[in-house]
Image 1 (cartoon, rainbow, N blue to C red):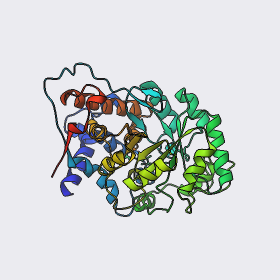
Image 2: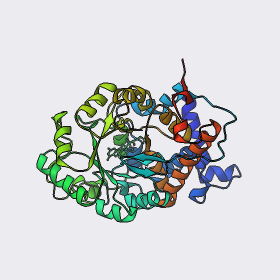
Image 3: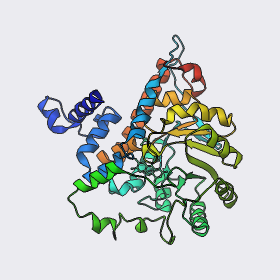
Image 4: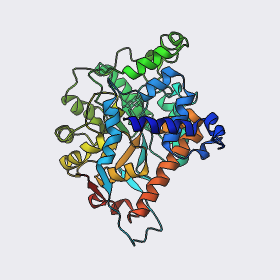
Length: 385
Ligand SMILES: Cc1cc2nc3c(=O)[nH]c(=O)nc-3n(C[C@H](O)[C@H](O)[C@H](O)COP(=O)(O)O)c2cc1C
């Protein structure tokens, strides 16, 4: 833990313009100079006001699930093969019949106006330029229609279910009309949460938060996708019959986001869900869970290839992504990494984050002798004992 904090401090120094000057290094002047997701994180720490930084970095309680997501990757090693022609890498994949150039997608992250004035629009432009799948949050700062126009195609839509079926139906119709092909219902926040780190950040903030968060653009009521829906979100009484009802309500594919183990993965399949996102909300929902990468093998096993399994949580390196692909994930999502890029540089920052992750994944594929995604199998990783 101590050496982790030291490493984080050194990373902060490395990305801090003052420290860089003191060390005789040029600070990053543009997104292209930033070397890693960790360096982007360090830049973000110096850039955002404490309340917004706290919101971004927060887990719940003591942030143990958040830490577990990162630690989980260290439980697997790579198993490299040599003398395979990997001069050309191909990371194309397909989800619900749509081809993608890469398995890396942008997770739904709410309220991106808190990180950059262009928020989800800048992210959509980056996703379009780099050809990545974007999932838009229900609590987005920009409407699904605006984001669709910036992205050039409708994004997947993440649903925080309104607390009435009438509200849910109105939201579903709106995103269907916008052309969204997939609805990803987040089911891991129905019981509430204790985001202590976020609260501590907000208490350090000396700005007048009330003017924005009570009546202004930061308030939940002002979010464009909640306009006209005069009820709350995340019904506590929801159960598995809701999946069946939601599925019947829409022609969109239905993905369940927030699955944490084999038993629920089986229920997803039996309830008619079209796909699963293995996720613990980036450690922001339930404390002391396993890392998502540790839960992945049992979930892949439980669905037996019948529906695609996607994953997010703590992915910061190409090697992390490679491990998830080896353990059976169809696609891998990042949340905070692209927000670090957004906060630091806007659209070019998001593009650089995507380039870094893609570049690192291609490098790992070459070095492991697995030039295509099909070549990455369970034999490409080994569990540490
Ligand atoms: C600031 C922030 C806001 C988020 N907002 C949402 C949201 O609105 N809906 C949702 O389903 N998940 C939300 N998430 C969770 C992400 O979709 C994703 O599961 C998580 O960020 C992945 O972990 P990572 O940040 O370590 O990559 C949010 C995450 C962060 C960090």
